[in-house]
Length: 181
Image 1 (tube, rainbow, N blue to C red):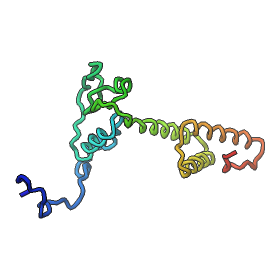
Image 2: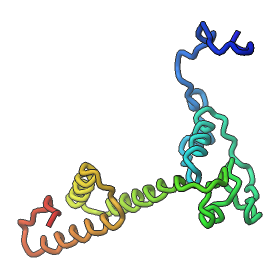
Image 3: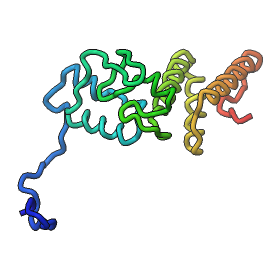
Image 4: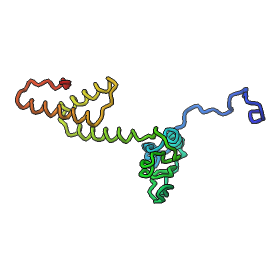
C-alpha cells in the first residue's frame, strides 16, 4: 500500500486517470466564469501568482463579496481575493500583496505592458490605414530584433510618421517604409 510507512515505491498507476484536461468553462458559461478567466493577477510574487492562477484554472477561486481589511493600514480597500495587503501599502513596502514577503520578482510588469498596448491601440485606431501599417511594421521589426517596444519608442515612431506626413504634403514620393533615418 502507498500509505503504509516506508513504502514509497508504488507499483501500479493510479486507479482513475482523467482522459481529458479539466476546463473550467466547459459546462459553465456564466458571467462570473468569464470574469475569472479574464482576471489578471498582479502585485504578487511569482509563487503566489501561480497559486492564484491554479485556483482560477480549477474553479477553486472564491472572489470577495466585500472589500477586505489591509493588515498594514487597516483600511477596507483590498479588492482581490487571497490578498492581505492593499496595493498602496505593498508598493510602499515593496512586498507581495498575498504573502507579504519582500520580493523583487513582483508581477507588475503586465500592467506596464497593458498600458503600452492600450495606448498603442488607441493611437492605431485614429491613424489612417497607410500609417497604421507603417507603425505596425516598425513595431514588428523591433520585436523581431529582440527589443521591447516602450512608450518612448512609440512616441518616436509617431514623430517619424508625423514628419513623413508633413513631407508628404510637399512631395508625393515619400518612402513610408523607411523609418530608420
